[in-house]
Length: 372
Image (tube, rainbow, N blue to C red; front, side, top):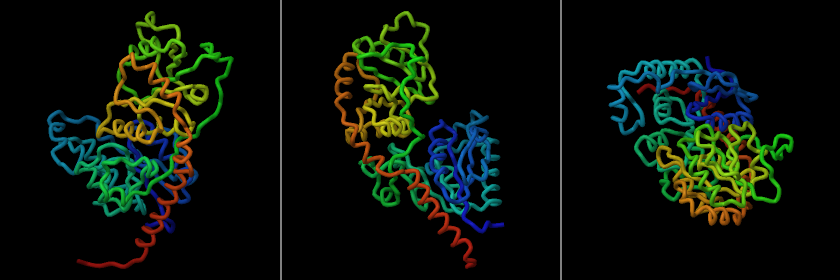
């Protein structure tokens, strides 16, 4: 039975927490009932004043046969479609059964080309969340074509030069938004390094970070000895005796804000959430690309450099470059971030989603039918 008010569904990709945080930021502003469909992270705490439920479906990466994986990319309109994978068969059934039982007025897909196409085949309107990167492949373009509209979690000034015209025309650009920020300063009772007049360079890694960068960090700290280097998100390794005295590994921090508030420069990946959180905090920072599909971080780093929002690097630099890079970063003007965050992008997203949901609900309730 169709509800008498619009209902929004969110499909949230399970890889990394950034998609969850982005969805929750929108849910906090959404004025209509909503559900979340996801896998692996469905049993985490989810929040939102109009959130009705969180539905878990099977994960498409579980128990994939070796021979089936050999066919995963046979179909150009799909990124991932292995054969003989029972978890995918069940996942498709679970998702379409929920669509049939709930009849959401619009699905917000963040992100999956396969779920996007499945949603359109199930005759449900959708809004697709965009990401930076080289996404002109058939699967992305098909998902964009299948969507009512696209949401870019960045303003038009941060659009990529390579984005096709029809994608730009279909995109609703949003001002920046991220998790709630704190201006909390470093608690002196918890200090494990002594910070006085020396600059502090904070190196911030998220849970999605990859690769062993300990030697890169030792080289950097050695080349910039007049600054204290603090690493968040990693512990020192077995070669701790080689770590210079101005390099401190603080491990995982639930509240990195208290560190970055005191940083002269932050070094981080070019991931979307890290970039937006640092931009919101008006940090001067260096974004180092990590390997991601579709050149996602490579393209974002280029845009950051183009707009002079940060220094974007396609990889860890030679150790001899660090003094000049830190000096260049300290001369960055953080004020352009004010334009990126001029309005609340999450509220803009919620407003657009609710508008599309009302349009879809009205069309569904019109009762006009045709037989072909």
